[in-house]
Amino acid sequence: MNEGHKKDHWLRDMLAHGPRPSLLIVLILVAVVFARILLPSLSNAKLKADHSTCTLYCAQDQVFAEPIFQEFKRQTGLQVSAVFDSEAVKTVGIANRLIAEKSHPQCDVFWSNEELRTRQLAAQNVFRETNGWVAMGYRSRRIVINTTRLSVPNAPTSLMELTNSAWRGKVALAYPLFGTTATHFLALRQYWGVERWESWCRGLAANKPFLVDGNSVVVKLVARGDAWIGLTDSDDIANARCEGARVEALPLNGEMLLIPNTVAIIRSAQHPIAAERLFQYLQQSDVLHELVAAKALEGISPSAVNVPTLKPDWHLILRDLEMGTDQMKRIFLQ
Image 1 (cartoon, rainbow, N blue to C red):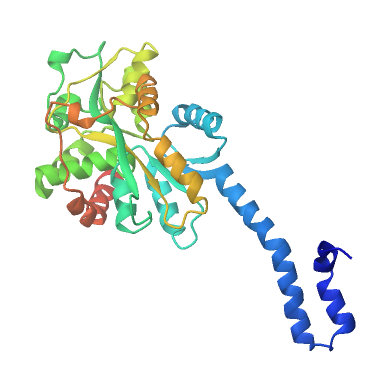
Image 2 (spheres, helix red, strand yellow; image 1 turned 90 degrees about the horizontal axis):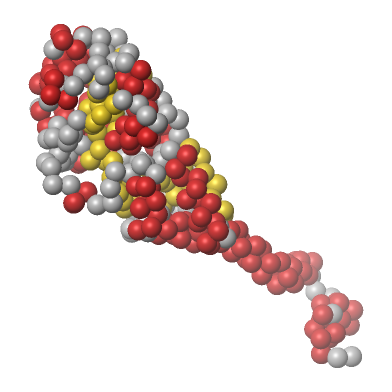
């Protein structure tokens, strides 16, 4: 009998010719044999799964994100299983989901199109401990006007002017409880101080603005002329202009806010190898340039913007997040 045959039947021979072992020893020996057979294959299957797929929660618009995932798969062979947000609740919905799943993460990578909720999640230790998240590229908050209704010289130069009676029923904005509108309003709360900010919010609400589900809807209302002025994001304005809408963004100023995209890896991600590769891929210069070309981003580096804009103290905004949000609920959801 050759060595291989002896090795394959060592347990059978021992049971047939040696002293009879106890049942417990037999079970242990059987378990060892099965472990030697099964564990390598299970380990290989896990490694293969980790290398082949990645679950991503995505607040970037699907139309911009999906071509990037397809190219990532072409280059790496890795499949991205993406869960997108809704226009109405934006990153707030995904952030709440990640917090709820913190003890049993279902997501590997989080791609956000704004910064506040990323910082909120980081403060709650949702991301991995080291190199948990990074910012990349930027958009901006802007005032947009319908150029057939209003000329640039006659447009308001400050957000404070939006409470004037001249603009009653002519302003559109997304509900300021979600997405970049919420972030912008909370940054203004810090910049102006609570009393001045609350007075402005009440004046704005009293001026009967259009309150809608999302920044893209804001631009559509302005493009149709239903509203003359809107508060929205630079990418939504750029896309409307590409479609021929007669709208224009007013220049950046100290009341406006730059909005980076962010990408993060979830703590205890189920597919850490694939997650790391996607994390690095989304930061690549050619990916960011592709997003700029598609109008999803306004630029690559916020440091290149030479106009003063809001510079939030994120620690204080997060500290006061619940209080500021409650104030906006009372004012805008009456």
